[in-house]
Amino acid sequence: MNDDMLFYRASTRDCAACAFKTRCCPKEPARKILRSIYEKDRDVARRSPRPRPSSDHVVTASASRCCSLIHVPHEPGSRISGVYERAIATPTGKLAVIRSADTFTLAPWKPALEPMRGRAVMGLVGPSRVMWTLDRGRTLPGRG
Image (cartoon, rainbow, N blue to C red; front, side, top):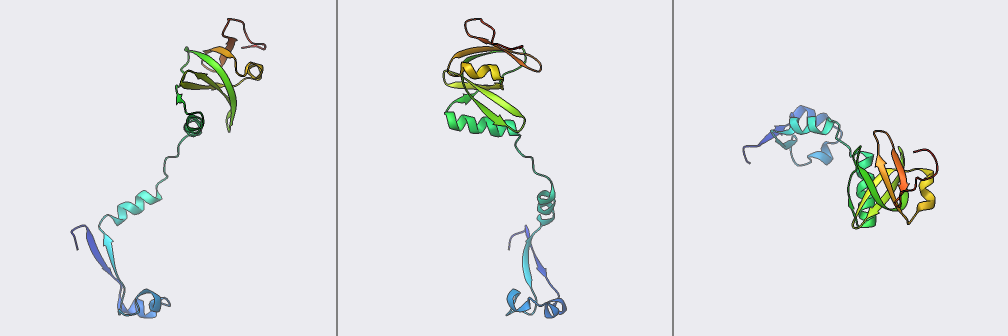
């Protein structure tokens, strides 16, 4: 036995009254269990809520595996350019997959993008939306 382990011994009286005695410790008068000194810490860790990956990370990882491309996130004020591949439905709304060489970007989807599937598009990322244009400089139908 190493220094991190302790023996827990049940009382003989408790074991004798237990209905599970024949299955638990049939050859011993009472139960002996080897326990870690860190058992209380493990119990606390098991009870604490575990961080779950956000839906954005799950969608990004899934699209990355599916398309065999590297995800490049966008930031407000940046430009997105590439070929509009498809839309992905998420719990928070649809996202457009914009492919550029061996990378892709996920951006908010708009119905005006759908006729441009397979064509080059460009978008300017604003604080709450993306304003899409064709790569040749023409604005897509609909307001920004």
